[in-house]
Amino acid sequence: DAMVIQNPRYQVTQFGKPVTLSCSQTLNHNVMYWYQQKSSQAPKLLFHYYDKDFNNEADTPDNFQSRRPNTSFCFLDIRSPGLGDAAMYLCATSRDPGDSNQPQHFGDGTRLSIL
Amino acid sequence: DAKTTQPNSMESNEEEPVHLPCNHSTISGTDYIHWYRQLPSQGPEYVIHGLTSNVNNRMASLAIAEDRKSSTLILHRATLRDAAVYYCILRDEWNRDDKIIFGKGTRLHILP
Image (cartoon, helix red, strand yellow):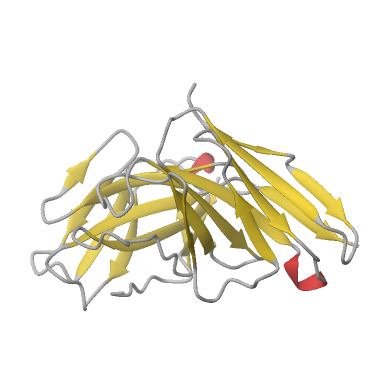
């Protein structure tokens, strides 16, 4: 089935050690999103790509970067993870930005722990 | 963005209907009402959406008040698998920069 796949499901890294989370999609959607979800909180949008155009949320820390080498893949890079970056990171896709009739499709997330 | 208000948590018995309310008193004429849910250890999943008329799909029904200031997600026969956080979200049809902004949602507990 077409889907959004996030690998790995669980990632452990050390304080300050760069880490990359990956997301792939078989839906051929134009838009890919990254959300951060801390424990017992709602998901919070970090940024999104519309095709190759990168759109950063105003309050996303500079420590978070993203790459989208092609339609199918998108990466979240955390340059120097701090303890406060421990969270679930969710990837989502949609066909068209701003089309409120189109739902977003989410992966099951990568849970990041910082030692 | 227009905001929504939902109860923090609700309980329901298995195999009974569940009515999850959402208030959105500042909704604009071009806002769609969307519902997503998030099962434990999973990403959110789309449930249903509507503009003015009530909507039905295989997962749920959405009842929208005539003045559109509130809506209700209806699960017709709750199962244990329906235990999740349910998010009511407004999305602007005409805003090309529209994004999903999640509120706190309602945590639904299903009692066996």
